[in-house]
Image 1 (cartoon, rainbow, N blue to C red):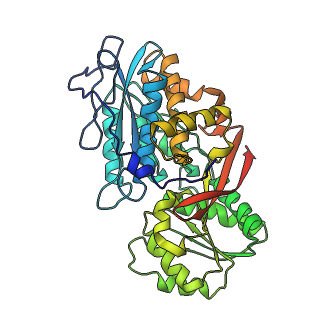
Image 2: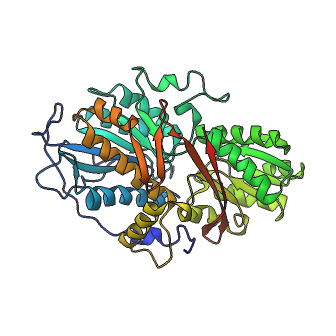
Image 3: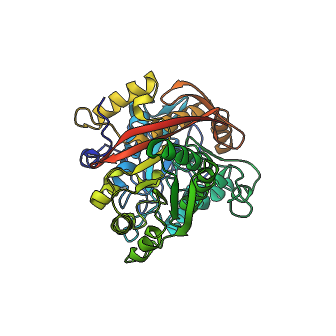
Length: 438
């Protein structure tokens, strides 16, 4: 199978999908006889629904739909639509379900925005027909929305992410912010789960793979000083040191800086074998890579977490990005089990991808999440609280991503996969992967 990642995805995602726009709806608790309300069109797309009558419930996704990651995140929306339409036919057991995709980014920032995340969270909580939220992509945004859904009427409302990796959302790590994770669950009831392995797995796995693949003996660590970036960078440096790699420095970069020449010169003076970039490409990552590469030369190995996807965005740095190693939480698409391979084939056809091109990995994981949420709704008594309970009780056997369930914290178990790709052109080719237990 060709290992291309995201080169033509942005073009094919312009294809439209029919949707029913709802204008009415119940203002109280949804039931078998009530129609769903709609979320604000200022942030959310029209309701996607092609079933009979009107849907009783809504699921929403919360993703940054502007900026460098747009193509990848639109593919994630398409995966939800595909599962809801072709696999569930807008039915979850006895309930009819519609979908709205919501944007948590701004055009100005080209990335998730705290104000948008908070506004979206309040909208989900207030609309009692919303029984689950698929998202977010960014951990910092999740930290704003989860507690709002935790206190929602008739809730808490389930939130389910395939991409958040910040440890503090679910469990303890030495670098957590004060009060985490309890501060996100004011009712004392957990309402957040994720398919992705957290940064206390992704960071260490990156260190192990970097040493194995690049034979690096020393590394300089920088981060964007945000929830995700600093957290994964901390996890990386601790593991790197334990593996005998010399950590030469640990510094933040300013996403608003106009130049990183001085930072590059500081790093170059330490003569590292590798540089680890804890953060996301949206935080001025292209300029950062170019300036650092110019300072340190071609031989220094660059590496980073999944914030550097989609690769087409990182590849805008040109030769500075080529050969960069990037981890992400999950198995490479080529290593997914039979059901995963069957889904990839069907979904690629749905997206009209060129022969041999794969959909973005997170869109495939998103399909698995949509299946789990819809199954939880089907097993529930129709209340938000019970949908949440059924999510935590989910046990997947031979699914798109294999066989797994969730622990009491909402983390995937018993195994967690971390993969590493090497950027080549505008795509990534698999470089290695590890399976972790815990």
